[in-house]
Length: 434
Image 1 (tube, rainbow, N blue to C red):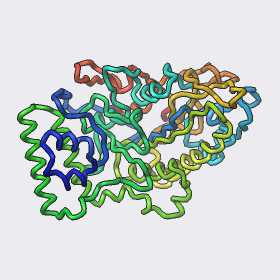
Image 2: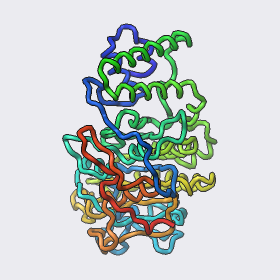
Image 3: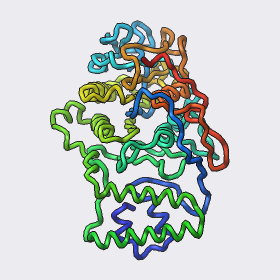
């Protein structure tokens, strides 16, 4: 149910159904039921941040397990490399696969991390660990790193959300055990922008205002009766949505406002459009934007798939870095490329594919205080094992959190009273920073 539909059809709904529907339909944001009452208790004392090298993050997530040998960690001459070639970059110490000629020209801005390691070899579990630093549990949902950033550092804009996820699903960005203020705003189609943000047809301003007043009274009465902290959180979300509906800041979600030449530069792919939208949102003051692109689960036809998957990523990422730099925003924006695990160096003979490989894979960091033009860590000659400067998932996430100045040792408690940290005891790779 959309915001417009909720407001248009409010009268026949009971208070209980209306509140539950409101929570699940607000601007398309999915949220857990607010009924019955389990309050999320948080210490609202401001959290002291450390020195930060970045204010905002664009987090590009390649869902399915991106092959490190066919992207950021090629092994020239090794049988495990298969037919994928390699090319030099503007950074003397870094080569990439032949599929990334545009990124190769931007490598002076990039630190390639070739020594990532995960303990999770299944997609859902690996995605969850990459986003939260914790293993998936049936008894608790941990916040994703973007939610931690919002909770600890706060928003940067009074109207726009602090956390947006473009193209993600249930296993990606999540508020976890944080209350509903920290639900990321989902955008399905970056070209369509923010949907269902207008009043329902036929609902004039006076009618709209009366319904808002009715909702506020219902929320207040329900909260007084139930003492449920989440009701207040949903009310805050609702008020933010209404402010955004009437604000010129909605233009931040409209990539058609960009010059056609720039839209073409990012590419026509969903990933390219998502990166362009991410740059617009960062420019307008959104703290954390995640862009999700799938299809990297290449058990079959790995090398044919690379011909389709890599060029859009190469174009979108390279143009994003150049665009941010040209606008003077790269120094304060950390750009991350991540995936849940790598692909096996061994090539399956029958299907010409690569299987899951969590013990060694690659990602990258750029901007936001990162020293570019370098690699960190290394795998062996076949790409099978990490042999230098291993970076577990929690350490990678701690590095991102460190860039934002998030206090790594600060604990926040779940609704059961258990304490958790932003990167689960991860240690940042400080050598990557200037």
